[in-house]
Length: 210
Image (cartoon, rainbow, N blue to C red; front, side, top):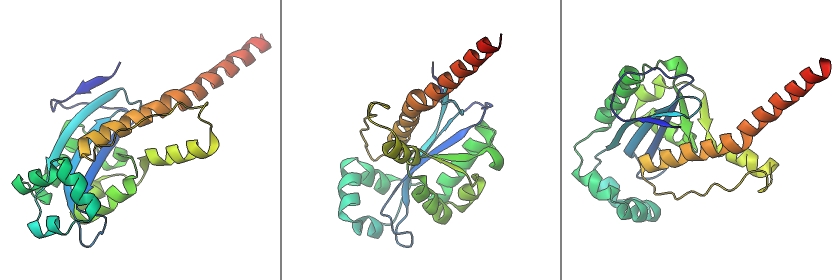
């Protein structure tokens, strides 16, 4: 059973994963910026989930007015554009709040602060520019759920792994929760089955030796 904690009480997690998702004004690293960021920390087995800050970051109106069609449509429909206009939080404010959460609540250090999510390379690029201290705090290794999906799509059949339907809302916290659910789905239908199979083979070999 999953244990979810929302109050910021210091905890110790085994093999923790830092799930971060960012919404940006676009994908141009020189022109665009992060306008929303959320973080959830789980243990390595995805059984314990600690929900951290979800922050909307202000940006110049000129940046909002020059967003491409996709960003304008989705960020307006989700309500994010108006929240950005109303926000007083700077990139530096958001970065500090997330670092405080990771270091003080989750007791994380750089060596065990592995980033997780879907296509996290894009998020990490923008963290490097907009939140360099947070970027440098994270371990160089990542757990990219989209990589597992691409491997599964190439090497397994739909009969091997049931479809995991996603309803992407293009809001940072919702996207993280979907990514965690997606990895749980793969864990259940791929990795746990492999583990069970291997254990049965070992048990069979022991029986044959007796």
